[in-house]
Figure (cartoon, rainbow, N blue to C red):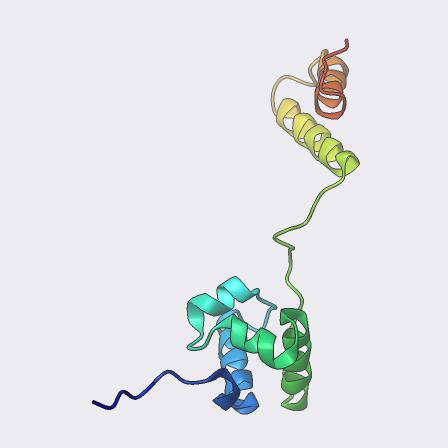
Length: 131
């Protein structure tokens, strides 16, 4: 009995095929950057193939960017970063902005606004409520 291995080897997938898959996914996302998980959901090849061919996922995206520029297209950066870590100041500023917005809709600003913000900051930063 003769068995034949029908799985395609990674080194047999051409760079052109990889770039075509990357472009297909970029088109799906309206030419905004995308991550390897999103690529795996849409493409017919694995993101691992891209990583192996170009070294890293980021290098593969940069090569795609240059490839698209050569065709008159632009791969835009994401409008947001899914793994962005916000600083404490950014979080506090956002909480304060939301507090002001929501309490202005009511009968004016809450008199305890500063006290509540101090409590929130102390709980989040120190982990202990000091009033």
